[in-house]
Length: 317
Ligand code: OKP
Ligand code: ZN
Image (cartoon, rainbow, N blue to C red; front, side):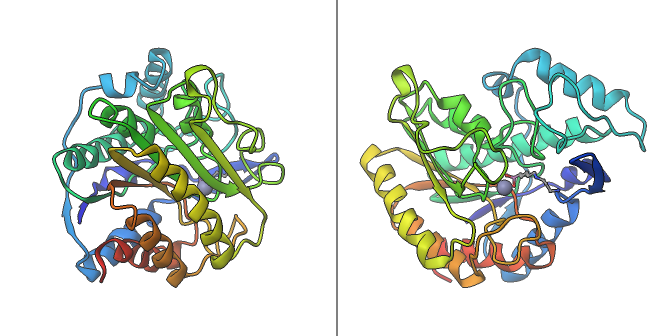
């Protein structure tokens, strides 16, 4: 397995988010990625490479030019200790801009694109340790710790070579990814997530959202109740994987969040460390060329174990 990682993410370091008017410590902390990469280094699970640099055109296929300019200009204009909250381009109060946000977000996209390029060249499984995450980022809105939609940009890139399925197993619905492909039939979006009636992002991810125009039937949402455990999760995953098998894609992208973990501080499912391995084995059994893109996961202490268990399920170690 190839692992794509850069420490450029660390310059995106907002100290806080706003939750219902109260400032709280930023859950999407740089330490998340640092713990994952150090566990993967120790476990020798794959070769770790730096991402290449890619043209901005790839981002502009998914995001509005004014939106990209906004993030670049506002990031550059902020001092080292400044933080920018709500604006037209923000869906919520969970994606502030700091000085290093733009360069970090661009390098997260580069990691996903490098992974996509390796998969297109025949690599069976690549893990892109993207930070900041991406699946909530819409055409011209940041939100939920996301700025550029890493998985959507990689999926669009791979869609030039063949059909792409995206399996989103983050705890939250990937509203941005769904939006990007809602009217397309060449990219299937399938998501398992917490019922949006009770959890972020609240307004999307209901089962009735199934695509529009050419995309009708190519978006599949499987909301699950809080407390969903390993067995219940795998039962629903089996249905999602059958959708993917039926679609018969050339490539699979897994938007992988570890916030379904039983002890995640802000979520509410019951997936265990061994459970992640079972989930991975089921996905791997599809036999597809697979790019795994990191999304959420906030139990910083245990993220390394989750990643090692999950990725181990793809290589049988
Ligand atoms: C991003 B990803 C707690 C409320 C924060 C925002 C959730 C964003 C999740 N302070 N809720 O999908 O993991
Ligand atoms: Zn999440």
